[in-house]
Amino acid sequence: MKAFSPGDLVFCTLGGQERRGTYITERDGMLVVKLDSGYNIGVSPGDCVLLEHVPPSPPQPKQIAQDSSLPRLSILSTGGTIASRIDYRTGAVTSQFDASDILRAIPGLQDIAQYRTRKIATILSENMTPSLWQELARAVCQEIRDGAEGVIVTHGTDTMGYSAAALSFMLDTPVPVVFVGSQRSADRPSSDNHMNALCSARTGVSELAEVVVVMHETTSDDRCAIHRGTRVRKMHTSRRDAFRSLGTAPLGYVEYPSLELTLSPHARRRREEEPKLKERLEERCALLHFYPGMPPEVIEACGECRGLVIAGTGLGHVSSRLIPAIRDLVREGTMVVMASQCLHGRVCDRVYDTGRDLLKAGVIEGEDMLPETALVKAMWVLGNADNDEEARQLMRQNIRGEYSGRSMHGQ
Image 1 (cartoon, helix red, strand yellow):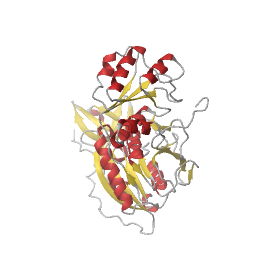
Image 2 (cartoon, rainbow, N blue to C red; image 1 turned 90 degrees about the vertical axis):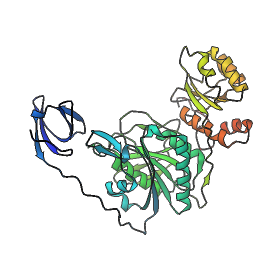
Image 3 (cartoon, rainbow, N blue to C red; image 1 turned 30 degrees about the vertical axis):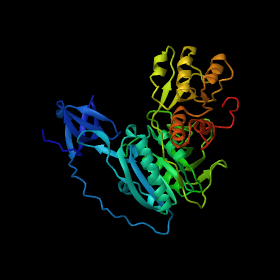
Image 4 (cartoon, one colour; image 1 turned 45 degrees about the vertical axis):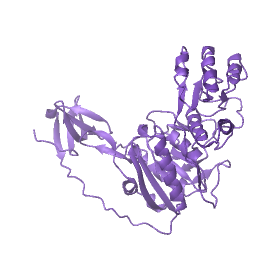
């Protein structure tokens, strides 16, 4: 059998069916082939023939001509699937593209704006940290001060909601700050990276002045939704329309391929002023998901935390046997916030005895904040407040649209 090289086009017989694909590597006596559908399979060497040898791609040119008359956007890259490609040595999707690679890889971006590019990190989003949030917030702020009329942040989808919420609190922005990612890498025929990137750039030159997430609204390639950074959650592991605004409607939509944009009256509008940055975060905070039978020791283990968010049941409840441990935490100086595991509705600890006991213990109601947003907010208020009482007051204030003034029936 003639040896294959990574990237070669091959023709394979599998289960009596003939399939085209791209050779990746050999492992455990089997050839690993990526089918045109985007999926990897293992094929016996005798069932695969070479169709075309594909030589390594020549280096891409570093400089790209741009139209200086267009609005100025900055692309800050942190990695993630939108900035990934297939590694044909291993078959894995890896974060290897920098921001300049993204600009070359997505035709149409240059028709919307002129771009500066900057790499902040090259990580998968599960490796994001509060210190990287701070570095990213500083970079976004500097880009705006240096003349960027909008900023696009490429980010992995798994923790993008956390990062968008973090920057929402740290940065008071007069221009759009747009987080964008993709559920499927660029080598997949069903990749969403091209449409998401174009819609994010269109949002970046709009009249918006908030931190938002822009992703597919439906499974079709018809429009993207603009989600407020403090109200968005990833709702599916792999669907292209995985992101949803919870407790509120999206701030707007971008139609595709026309790129026509509409904004909600509730969206903050662009303004002529400098960005304001408050980047301090208290990292000694935790998020606990209550479960039946949770022992008090789990709460007690958070004694070193300055902030604790509990995702309770229903209206914001935990077992009554946990309340003494929670009361002790509050007395020792830990700010405890109650959120709900429910996707819709708000915390109200005034209805049942358990809730009233939690309030007496010093728990702060998290309204209809997402638990992850409540966690990031707790980190921010504890990092920036002058004292514990001010932190508790800030936690109760609606600072970046993170909760609604009230919840209507059924919402």
